[in-house]
Figure (cartoon, rainbow, N blue to C red):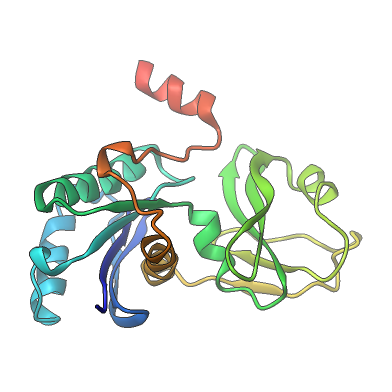
Length: 220
């Protein structure tokens, strides 16, 4: 069987959708939605499925970026995937944005970093297979850099101007991830699906990293 994966990312102003069959990317679409994805996501999703000649019923596993990112965007993406997967009785996977970014590195270890605002970054280190090496955290860039392991390391970022001059990483390679990361999410989801780690969609949860902000948001 060649599993069909539907993946989406709605965690930033530039989101994306992707369809992947057995590791082959059928199509990836970038969606610019500065006003939010709630009113445009399902239209783009329907158009993608139609262009690829498949239906929701053909999808074997669903996936969404789980953050860190926009709290509202994270919830919209997860709600969409949960709803589709539950309706079709299929498994689903929530993928960290940082883990997805790591796939765009080339070194054995990849430090993925995103803007957390307030003068802080979200960061984590993964190996070439996407396995977590240094846990995800949030904090000032200099402090995060101090926590990173020795040895060759690629930095992968989507939205941070990394200032590495004067640090032990000033000669490190910095890769810029594309705005569309749904294809990377689909690749990681295929691994999870094949190894039995795709789960009941009801069990999917957001990956805010800065949990206290999420709790404050819900109280507003």
